[in-house]
Image (cartoon, rainbow, N blue to C red; front, side):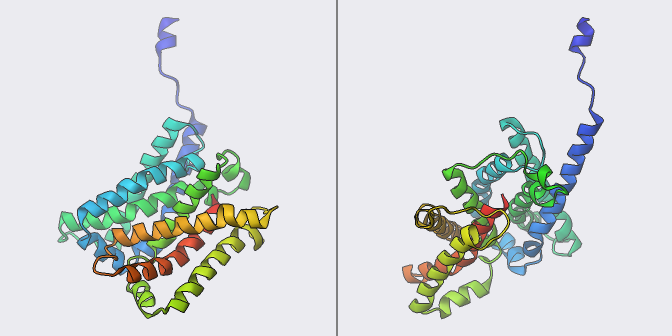
Length: 280
């Protein structure tokens, strides 16, 4: 009786198979969400030249974001603080493995590349890859019920957190590029004002009025605008400023130039914030 009680629980084959399937989806999600970044030259260059303390700050800032995504969605069915922490670690490992494999496949990371450069290029890509891994079950599951039956309902703070995650993901696709700086340089104050208005209007329409799957009903449109849309846009601007700082895009620029660049990057970031409200 004692030996039976102390023996380890037998492995559950269906449970293990389900986890392997979830893990496969995590790799697929990392690919789907991260391919544009993995094939962007500016991201390769940033991985080489970025100050390592900035890279560490980016990864450190991404860890609570990844844990939050694991809590709201996660790539496995098991829920709970410990399981969410494990999901976060596994998702980050998936991000590192996917980035390493594809950068080697593309010939970006080669045997003659220094470890300093290789680690920088891979580490920079790991966080967005991990985000894709954590969103995989929700977006890539064959059954809608399978992907959406057990996620946590987000509080108001949670809603803003999810918008920040979406804003960061979209901002990462644009922040390191020269085109974003060029757009900000060519923009007049009228262009910047129009871009602010357009960003806010699109964010509100996508979340509340455009008829997309997963959008929310706004019983009081004006309240929703001030309660969600404007704070969501403010979050997008904050994330944009953080991304610009990570990629060293604010050094050597005056306040006006930084604000213009932040507003330009805030446009895709606000679209990402709206998308996160629909997807997660």
